Image (spheres, rainbow, N blue to C red):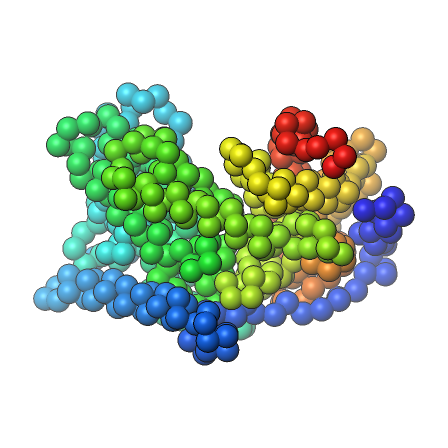
Length: 434
């Protein structure tokens, strides 16, 4: 990007609020449906129709299993508690800890809440009692204060996020079980190894025909059906598949067939990232938080999350591509282009801070601060964009409602780690003329 263009973008980003304006309305993401698949060329339809049939059948099986448990019960158990799930499944303890009573309690709880499909729900502490017969598989993740026409409203409030990779769910449960199984090499560990294999099989079933994963599977509709990079979900599943394929991270026990399937899934994830990286004037730039599974175009999520490019998730995707052992020329081009885009968008001498109670968080001038990146950038112009809960799209973060300005990370330093790793990677893989 030229210096002149960069200055123009910065001037746009920091224009006084008086000149800020609503620049659009955030549209809903399209669900994956048979009607949409029917619009594809005939040669492309069969894998997608099979995928939809598999999702429908698994959802019916999951619901039938719960209904069967509830037959004859005079009262259903209360849903499990919600809360901070990841803290209850630490993955950084000394190896011996995973054979202790505290870890085994968590592992038993994890197994009890594994859905018939093989996945897990989100936002559910695992250091609690195991699931009871007839109890819901997942905690209540419904919106507490939904807005009219909210994109995140569940079609069925009694069946939401039943199997998801959102907020590190399923990925963390699999990794935790593998650590426990590593401390129990004999028959006592078989049940945990089986849980890991069922979890990996679930992720393989959930994988789209072209690679990548939806946020929720079996499919739930809305933006949950999109290819999900948000919260680094796709990258973390792809990393897990790579570890499974190579027998790393306590996954050496996996059967050869499952390791081979995981290797294929990792490869498809790399190819999908190359296909979804948005090109501007022919040059690869960044990714969105979600991409439509059929068109691969950026997709919206919640009311205030536009179909725009995302600096944080893009940085994590680039770190993953830099971890590819022998990168192809296409991977090298993708990393080089993505890093150039991130560097060109870095902002100095600005801070994202709470000014006071009345003004809330605002982007202000602060000499020496930075670098900062906007969370979202327009997928055509690379200008920062910001969404409000009423689905309005803005060109100035200070123009948002106080509630949304305070309640979301609109500016941050997410790409710093990727940029720090890039120089060493570039020295190894970029030709001097690049």
